[in-house]
Length: 98
Image (cartoon, rainbow, N blue to C red):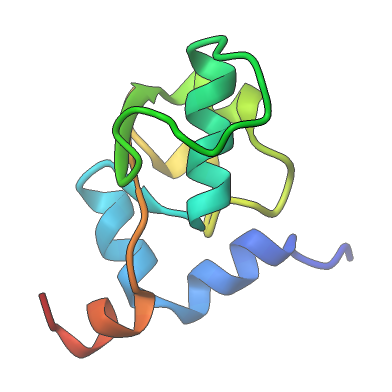
């Protein structure tokens, strides 16, 4: 029997990721979101400035093509056809803070 991927294992232990996936959202690190935006919009260069640096919406298929295995906190197929990619403080979300 194969081991579950790290992304799936983490999701099973984190109800925040399950709740976000239920509404079509996924929480990622800032650097991952910047890279997703740059690749999806074909923004060249090494600069860290990208538009919408805290959230971005794109098709699930495009998201799957732009991230490495394990960078998403759960299985891609749990997400709807259009996904909101967000950054934020996971601990604050768990605590229910703004």
